[in-house]
Image 1 (cartoon, rainbow, N blue to C red):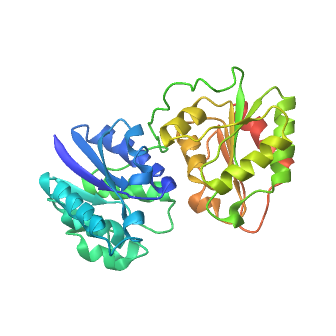
Image 2: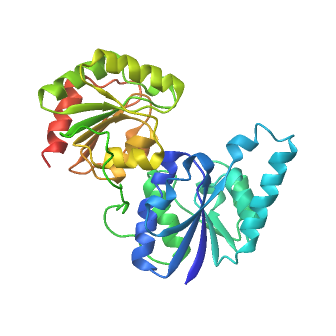
Image 3: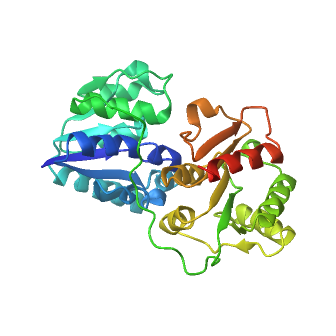
Amino acid sequence: MKNVLLLRTSSMGDLIHTWPALTDLARHCPQVNISWLAEEGFADIPGLHPLVTRTIPIAWRRWRKTLFQAATWREIRQLRQTLAATRWDLVLDAQGLLKSAIPGSWANGPLAGFDRHSIREPLASRFYARRYAVSRQLSAIERNRQLFAAAFGYQPEGAPVFGIRCGDRLDWLPATGYAVLLHATSRDSKLWPEAHWIALAQALQQQGLAIVIPWGSAAEQQRAQRLASAIPAAVLAPKMTLRAAAALLGHAAAVIGVDTGLTHLANALDVPLVAIYTDTDPALTGVVETVRAANVGRAGVTPTVNEVLALLVRVRGA
Protein backbone atom coordinates (compact mmCIF):
# COMPACT_ATOMS: atom_id res chain seq x y z
CA MET A 1 0.00 0.00 0.00
CA LYS A 2 1.49 3.36 -1.10
CA ASN A 3 1.10 6.20 1.38
CA VAL A 4 0.45 9.47 -0.49
CA LEU A 5 -0.05 12.97 0.87
CA LEU A 6 -2.08 15.25 -1.42
CA LEU A 7 -1.66 19.01 -1.07
CA ARG A 8 -4.74 20.92 -2.24
CA THR A 9 -5.65 23.35 0.50
CA SER A 10 -8.24 25.70 -1.04
CA SER A 11 -10.62 26.88 -2.30
CA MET A 12 -13.71 24.68 -2.38
CA GLY A 13 -13.94 24.59 -6.17
CA ASP A 14 -10.25 23.69 -6.44
CA LEU A 15 -10.70 20.77 -4.06
CA ILE A 16 -13.73 19.54 -5.98
CA HIS A 17 -11.83 19.78 -9.27
CA THR A 18 -9.30 17.32 -7.85
CA TRP A 19 -11.80 14.48 -7.34
CA PRO A 20 -11.77 13.20 -10.95
CA ALA A 21 -7.98 12.78 -10.72
CA LEU A 22 -8.51 10.66 -7.59
CA THR A 23 -11.07 8.55 -9.43
CA ASP A 24 -8.53 7.97 -12.21
CA LEU A 25 -5.90 7.10 -9.62
CA ALA A 26 -8.18 4.59 -7.87
CA ARG A 27 -8.76 2.87 -11.21
CA HIS A 28 -5.08 2.67 -12.20
CA CYS A 29 -3.40 2.37 -8.78
CA PRO A 30 -5.90 0.81 -6.34
CA GLN A 31 -3.23 0.19 -3.68
CA VAL A 32 -2.75 3.93 -3.00
CA ASN A 33 -3.74 5.34 0.39
CA ILE A 34 -4.53 9.08 0.19
CA SER A 35 -4.22 11.61 3.00
CA TRP A 36 -5.24 15.16 2.04
CA LEU A 37 -3.94 18.46 3.47
CA ALA A 38 -6.78 21.01 3.25
CA GLU A 39 -7.76 24.32 4.81
CA GLU A 40 -9.70 23.75 8.03
CA GLY A 41 -12.79 25.44 6.58
CA PHE A 42 -12.92 22.86 3.78
CA ALA A 43 -11.99 19.81 5.85
CA ASP A 44 -15.37 18.17 5.11
CA ILE A 45 -14.70 18.14 1.37
CA PRO A 46 -11.85 15.61 0.81
CA GLY A 47 -13.51 12.73 2.67
CA LEU A 48 -16.51 12.75 0.34
CA HIS A 49 -14.28 10.81 -2.07
CA PRO A 50 -13.90 7.14 -1.06
CA LEU A 51 -10.16 7.04 -1.87
CA VAL A 52 -9.36 9.60 0.86
CA THR A 53 -8.78 7.93 4.23
CA ARG A 54 -7.57 10.93 6.20
CA THR A 55 -7.89 14.72 6.07
CA ILE A 56 -5.18 16.82 7.73
CA PRO A 57 -6.36 20.39 8.39
CA ILE A 58 -4.16 23.43 7.85
CA ALA A 59 -5.22 26.88 9.07
CA TRP A 60 -3.17 29.21 6.88
CA ARG A 61 -6.09 31.58 6.28
CA ARG A 62 -6.42 32.04 10.03
CA TRP A 63 -2.69 31.93 10.81
CA ARG A 64 -1.75 34.71 8.43
CA LYS A 65 -3.91 37.09 10.50
CA THR A 66 -2.26 36.07 13.77
CA LEU A 67 1.38 35.41 12.85
CA PHE A 68 2.68 37.29 15.90
CA GLN A 69 0.74 35.15 18.38
CA ALA A 70 2.43 32.28 20.21
CA ALA A 71 -0.63 30.04 19.75
CA THR A 72 -0.29 30.31 15.98
CA TRP A 73 3.31 29.08 16.04
CA ARG A 74 2.37 26.23 18.36
CA GLU A 75 -0.22 25.08 15.82
CA ILE A 76 2.32 25.38 12.98
CA ARG A 77 4.84 23.28 14.91
CA GLN A 78 2.16 20.70 15.60
CA LEU A 79 1.32 20.48 11.90
CA ARG A 80 5.01 20.09 11.01
CA GLN A 81 5.27 17.23 13.50
CA THR A 82 2.15 15.58 12.08
CA LEU A 83 3.45 15.74 8.50
CA ALA A 84 6.90 14.50 9.50
CA ALA A 85 5.57 11.61 11.60
CA THR A 86 4.44 9.57 8.57
CA ARG A 87 6.79 8.18 5.94
CA TRP A 88 5.16 9.24 2.67
CA ASP A 89 5.90 7.40 -0.58
CA LEU A 90 4.93 10.60 -2.41
CA VAL A 91 3.83 14.11 -1.49
CA LEU A 92 1.94 15.60 -4.45
CA ASP A 93 1.25 19.34 -4.62
CA ALA A 94 -1.78 19.85 -6.87
CA GLN A 95 -2.08 23.51 -5.77
CA GLY A 96 1.19 24.85 -7.15
CA LEU A 97 1.49 27.74 -4.71
CA LEU A 98 3.96 28.63 -1.98
CA LYS A 99 1.22 28.14 0.62
CA SER A 100 1.06 24.47 -0.39
CA ALA A 101 4.70 23.85 -1.36
CA ILE A 102 6.08 25.07 1.97
CA PRO A 103 4.03 22.69 4.17
CA GLY A 104 4.76 20.00 1.60
CA SER A 105 8.45 20.47 2.32
CA TRP A 106 7.77 19.63 5.99
CA ALA A 107 6.45 16.17 5.07
CA ASN A 108 8.64 13.09 5.32
CA GLY A 109 8.70 12.06 1.67
CA PRO A 110 9.58 13.14 -1.89
CA LEU A 111 7.69 16.27 -2.97
CA ALA A 112 6.34 16.49 -6.52
CA GLY A 113 4.31 19.05 -8.46
CA PHE A 114 3.99 21.18 -11.58
CA ASP A 115 7.08 22.59 -13.28
CA ARG A 116 7.73 26.33 -13.15
CA HIS A 117 6.04 27.01 -16.49
CA SER A 118 2.82 25.30 -15.43
CA ILE A 119 1.83 27.33 -12.34
CA ARG A 120 1.02 30.88 -11.26
CA GLU A 121 3.82 30.97 -8.67
CA PRO A 122 6.92 29.50 -10.38
CA LEU A 123 8.93 29.79 -7.14
CA ALA A 124 6.86 26.95 -5.69
CA SER A 125 8.39 24.48 -8.17
CA ARG A 126 11.81 24.98 -6.54
CA PHE A 127 10.55 22.97 -3.57
CA TYR A 128 9.78 19.92 -5.72
CA ALA A 129 12.09 16.97 -6.26
CA ARG A 130 9.93 15.89 -9.22
CA ARG A 131 8.36 18.35 -11.66
CA TYR A 132 5.79 17.80 -14.40
CA ALA A 133 4.78 20.00 -17.34
CA VAL A 134 1.02 20.48 -17.69
CA SER A 135 -0.54 23.04 -20.04
CA ARG A 136 -2.13 26.05 -18.34
CA GLN A 137 -4.65 26.20 -21.20
CA LEU A 138 -6.42 23.09 -19.93
CA SER A 139 -9.38 23.25 -17.56
CA ALA A 140 -8.63 22.89 -13.85
CA ILE A 141 -10.02 19.35 -13.84
CA GLU A 142 -7.89 18.22 -16.77
CA ARG A 143 -4.77 19.82 -15.31
CA ASN A 144 -5.24 17.75 -12.15
CA ARG A 145 -5.85 14.58 -14.14
CA GLN A 146 -2.70 15.15 -16.19
CA LEU A 147 -0.59 15.90 -13.09
CA PHE A 148 -1.71 12.72 -11.31
CA ALA A 149 -1.18 10.65 -14.45
CA ALA A 150 2.37 11.96 -14.86
CA ALA A 151 3.20 11.41 -11.20
CA PHE A 152 1.87 7.83 -11.10
CA GLY A 153 2.64 6.70 -14.63
CA TYR A 154 -0.63 6.17 -16.51
CA GLN A 155 -2.80 7.91 -19.11
CA PRO A 156 -6.17 9.39 -18.08
CA GLU A 157 -9.01 8.09 -20.22
CA GLY A 158 -12.59 9.11 -20.90
CA ALA A 159 -14.71 11.83 -19.37
CA PRO A 160 -13.95 12.96 -15.80
CA VAL A 161 -15.75 11.02 -13.06
CA PHE A 162 -16.01 12.67 -9.64
CA GLY A 163 -16.91 9.46 -7.81
CA ILE A 164 -18.28 10.96 -4.57
CA ARG A 165 -21.16 10.26 -2.17
CA CYS A 166 -23.86 12.74 -1.11
CA GLY A 167 -25.16 11.17 2.11
CA ASP A 168 -28.72 10.76 3.40
CA ARG A 169 -31.56 13.14 2.62
CA LEU A 170 -31.91 15.88 5.25
CA ASP A 171 -35.05 15.66 7.38
CA TRP A 172 -36.02 19.34 7.01
CA LEU A 173 -36.22 19.24 3.21
CA PRO A 174 -39.55 19.44 1.36
CA ALA A 175 -41.19 16.07 0.80
CA THR A 176 -41.67 16.89 -2.90
CA GLY A 177 -39.06 17.59 -5.57
CA TYR A 178 -37.12 20.77 -4.96
CA ALA A 179 -34.75 23.17 -6.71
CA VAL A 180 -31.77 24.75 -4.95
CA LEU A 181 -30.85 28.36 -5.74
CA LEU A 182 -27.12 28.93 -5.19
CA HIS A 183 -27.23 32.71 -5.29
CA ALA A 184 -24.05 33.48 -3.29
CA THR A 185 -20.49 33.80 -4.53
CA SER A 186 -17.15 35.33 -3.59
CA ARG A 187 -17.38 38.52 -5.69
CA ASP A 188 -20.29 40.83 -6.41
CA SER A 189 -19.33 40.80 -10.09
CA LYS A 190 -20.29 37.09 -10.19
CA LEU A 191 -23.79 37.63 -8.79
CA TRP A 192 -26.99 37.19 -10.77
CA PRO A 193 -29.65 39.90 -10.23
CA GLU A 194 -32.08 39.17 -7.39
CA ALA A 195 -35.02 39.97 -9.67
CA HIS A 196 -33.83 37.18 -11.98
CA TRP A 197 -33.72 34.70 -9.08
CA ILE A 198 -37.26 35.64 -8.05
CA ALA A 199 -38.64 35.26 -11.58
CA LEU A 200 -36.81 31.94 -12.00
CA ALA A 201 -38.16 30.61 -8.69
CA GLN A 202 -41.73 31.55 -9.59
CA ALA A 203 -41.42 29.73 -12.91
CA LEU A 204 -40.04 26.63 -11.18
CA GLN A 205 -42.85 26.67 -8.62
CA GLN A 206 -45.33 26.65 -11.50
CA GLN A 207 -43.60 23.45 -12.64
CA GLY A 208 -44.28 21.87 -9.23
CA LEU A 209 -40.85 22.32 -7.64
CA ALA A 210 -40.31 23.60 -4.11
CA ILE A 211 -37.58 26.22 -3.72
CA VAL A 212 -34.71 25.91 -1.24
CA ILE A 213 -32.35 28.84 -0.63
CA PRO A 214 -29.09 28.13 1.24
CA TRP A 215 -26.57 30.62 2.59
CA GLY A 216 -23.20 30.73 4.35
CA SER A 217 -22.02 34.14 5.53
CA ALA A 218 -24.02 36.92 7.19
CA ALA A 219 -24.22 38.86 3.90
CA GLU A 220 -25.42 35.73 2.09
CA GLN A 221 -28.02 35.18 4.79
CA GLN A 222 -29.40 38.66 4.25
CA ARG A 223 -29.69 38.08 0.50
CA ALA A 224 -31.27 34.67 1.10
CA GLN A 225 -33.82 36.23 3.45
CA ARG A 226 -34.71 38.88 0.86
CA LEU A 227 -35.20 36.21 -1.79
CA ALA A 228 -37.22 33.96 0.51
CA SER A 229 -39.51 36.83 1.49
CA ALA A 230 -40.18 37.56 -2.20
CA ILE A 231 -40.78 33.91 -3.17
CA PRO A 232 -43.94 32.49 -1.55
CA ALA A 233 -43.35 29.18 0.30
CA ALA A 234 -39.61 29.21 -0.35
CA VAL A 235 -37.58 27.26 2.22
CA LEU A 236 -34.75 29.25 3.81
CA ALA A 237 -32.10 26.64 4.64
CA PRO A 238 -30.48 26.57 8.08
CA LYS A 239 -26.75 27.10 8.53
CA MET A 240 -25.12 23.94 7.16
CA THR A 241 -21.82 22.11 7.15
CA LEU A 242 -20.33 21.23 3.77
CA ARG A 243 -21.37 17.61 4.27
CA ALA A 244 -24.96 18.71 4.86
CA ALA A 245 -24.74 20.91 1.75
CA ALA A 246 -23.68 17.84 -0.23
CA ALA A 247 -26.79 16.01 1.00
CA LEU A 248 -28.97 19.01 0.10
CA LEU A 249 -27.58 19.18 -3.43
CA GLY A 250 -27.34 15.45 -4.03
CA HIS A 251 -31.10 14.88 -3.58
CA ALA A 252 -32.25 17.97 -5.55
CA ALA A 253 -34.41 17.78 -8.65
CA ALA A 254 -32.54 20.80 -10.01
CA VAL A 255 -29.73 23.13 -8.97
CA ILE A 256 -29.10 26.59 -10.38
CA GLY A 257 -25.95 28.34 -9.23
CA VAL A 258 -23.52 31.13 -9.92
CA ASP A 259 -19.74 30.67 -10.05
CA THR A 260 -19.15 29.23 -6.59
CA GLY A 261 -17.84 26.08 -4.96
CA LEU A 262 -21.27 24.64 -4.20
CA THR A 263 -22.18 24.80 -7.88
CA HIS A 264 -19.16 22.64 -8.65
CA LEU A 265 -20.18 20.33 -5.82
CA ALA A 266 -23.60 19.90 -7.46
CA ASN A 267 -21.80 19.09 -10.71
CA ALA A 268 -19.76 16.43 -8.92
CA LEU A 269 -22.98 14.91 -7.54
CA ASP A 270 -24.43 14.62 -11.07
CA VAL A 271 -27.72 16.39 -10.42
CA PRO A 272 -29.54 18.46 -13.07
CA LEU A 273 -27.56 21.71 -13.02
CA VAL A 274 -27.34 25.07 -14.75
CA ALA A 275 -24.27 27.13 -13.84
CA ILE A 276 -24.51 30.89 -14.40
CA TYR A 277 -21.42 32.93 -15.35
CA THR A 278 -21.26 36.72 -15.54
CA ASP A 279 -17.61 37.55 -14.78
CA THR A 280 -15.47 34.50 -15.61
CA ASP A 281 -14.83 32.17 -18.52
CA PRO A 282 -16.74 28.89 -18.16
CA ALA A 283 -14.37 27.27 -20.67
CA LEU A 284 -11.66 27.37 -17.97
CA THR A 285 -13.56 27.35 -14.68
CA GLY A 286 -17.05 26.21 -15.60
CA VAL A 287 -18.76 23.01 -14.56
CA VAL A 288 -18.15 19.86 -16.58
CA GLU A 289 -20.89 19.95 -19.19
CA THR A 290 -22.84 16.71 -19.58
CA VAL A 291 -26.39 15.82 -20.54
CA ARG A 292 -27.28 16.82 -16.94
CA ALA A 293 -25.13 19.96 -16.57
CA ALA A 294 -24.72 23.13 -18.61
CA ASN A 295 -22.95 26.48 -18.38
CA VAL A 296 -24.54 29.73 -19.49
CA GLY A 297 -23.12 33.24 -19.80
CA ARG A 298 -19.57 34.56 -19.79
CA ALA A 299 -17.54 37.54 -18.61
CA GLY A 300 -19.55 40.71 -19.21
CA VAL A 301 -22.71 38.85 -20.27
CA THR A 302 -25.60 38.27 -17.85
CA PRO A 303 -27.84 35.35 -18.89
CA THR A 304 -31.58 35.91 -19.00
CA VAL A 305 -34.14 33.98 -16.97
CA ASN A 306 -35.50 32.41 -20.15
CA GLU A 307 -32.03 31.16 -21.13
CA VAL A 308 -31.65 29.48 -17.78
CA LEU A 309 -35.13 27.96 -17.93
CA ALA A 310 -34.49 26.57 -21.41
CA LEU A 311 -31.31 24.85 -20.22
CA LEU A 312 -33.11 23.48 -17.17
CA VAL A 313 -35.63 21.78 -19.44
CA ARG A 314 -32.76 20.11 -21.25
CA VAL A 315 -30.75 18.94 -18.23
CA ARG A 316 -33.81 17.76 -16.30
CA GLY A 317 -35.04 15.79 -19.28
CA ALA A 318 -31.77 13.88 -19.66
